[in-house]
Image (cartoon, rainbow, N blue to C red; front, side, top):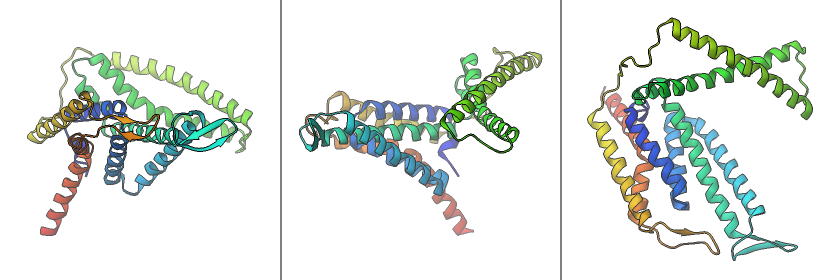
Length: 288
């Protein structure tokens, strides 16, 4: 049971807003690692063994970004080795590793957001802007539909070719362009059909919308925790207590233990909310 996914949409908006802001703005490996570990723990409770796919993705991104920055960025004092006149430094490798953690964390948090948020939540949250809500909800519905349609088009082309597929680079590019062309045509026709269907059914963007979400005490408490922890991190960052130096040498100029604890509490919030739900289910089952 994913208790965090059933919370009020405002809770999700506030949490993911502060998460993305801090992960992208606080250039600190401690915070990057906390965010990445937290989203992996949350994915483990949500998806079980499928979390290993996220771990593989994180490892690939970490290695790719680290090696890329290590090979093409040359700065720092700790030289690992030299090839001709090019120095490869520990600082470049470590900075790439930090950026890989940031990229992995953002991608995984976006994945969690896409699984939690559906069209109904988007329409409810953006009910003050019905046009924008409609566009977002339609986009959320079109993405999986177009993905499935693209696979259907590939299978149809494969059947027409007798089950043979050109594995050369030129053949794959040609096939991709053909699939994209058919998919664009399908999307245009589908959008026209959807617009006419909505008009025929009397769609009124200014109509009053009903939402089934009720704001509870738990929602208010979680928003309070998010706000307090985010305020602590923001204050410490504004005071310059979260500065980490990558060049010319690696060291933490100042690390606020209060800010680190607050960020851990913020990022681990979905994990602890779901963990509490699981413990309640187990306690209830043991009593019965």
